[in-house]
Length: 397
Ligand code: V47
Ligand code: SF4
Image (cartoon, rainbow, N blue to C red; front, side, top):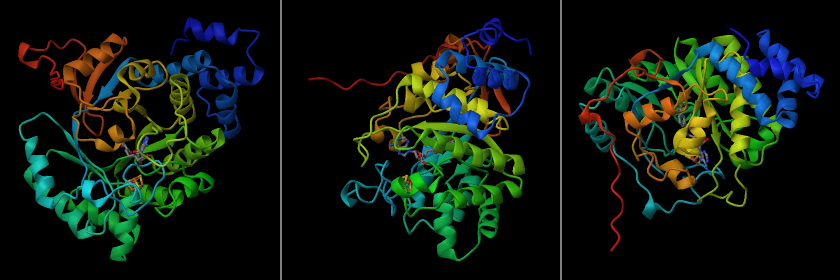
């Protein structure tokens, strides 16, 4: 790919630290950066420099293409047996009276609510409770696929899988095969947090370890399936913990190639036990996207979860390595709004999302879960009936 004028200026800048110049040259030569170089980027590289490198990689991989998908979420429960300090679903925060525990039929009612709507994916994620076991989830996945075979089931994380397989006394390989046979098609990226035990033991003790999280994804990849990975950043971790996290993912990806997308999740500090921890700035968020793009050379996609970081930051992120914005969704995703997401009722119509991407100078593509193109929106004309939906504002008496 042609090197941009910005990149040329950067390489010729006599004030650029020699170590940063060497990293820029590696990016140009398509070479992988090391662990120490990753830490150096976090410690020394300013936003403009990182944007030039990350955008070069992003455009080399995808040009201006920016992906989104149309999905909906089911959160089976907001109660949880675990006590993650950053989470508003922690057992120490939730009173039973304000909790919900959907039955199988209630979850199927949510699925049916989307009948006839052009969604391609259901994303199922929530707390961990004993009644949601191997038999329950197998039946749920089977019923969803029987009801709507073309709807892609992206569900649960190694946190749930480790818990339910242990209870059922089956190993990860057997368990993941069972889930696949029942109708599971992808695993979302949640539950990863920060893998290193120095941090994980303080914020997410008792649930699956980093190694167990990676082992479950590895088994899933071995049977030919795809998954995502997240990183919860901007709390008590040090920069090197973030690099360690990405290094473990990069190594697994070298072995399996099963990851599709990396999703950095900005820690939000409301309604959890870490409210005293300040949140990161937008500049730090953009730096983090860019460094992820540079470090994870074997990941195809970097995703920004717009509901969590605001629409404007999501637009900006498209110049810092991000090529995917999490789809149009409605306000059924409560875990984020409770933690202080920018969007208290996160919903965007397709037209709004397409405009958001176009106004950032990019090329919107609706994809399915596996990145097959559903609709190319670059020259698409919306019909009158597809006007953006606006939320009802609360009535003020
Ligand atoms: O693992 C919980 C995070 C994750 C907070 O794969 C918080 O497409 C910030 O993984 N501040 C679950 N984050 C969500 C998830 C996800 C989201 C979007 C897309 C995909 C995908 C996956 O939510 C948890 C945890 O890391 N979370 N509390 C909080 N206070
Ligand atoms: Fe439970 Fe997940 Fe929240 Fe931890 S992050 S308390 S495992 S819902």
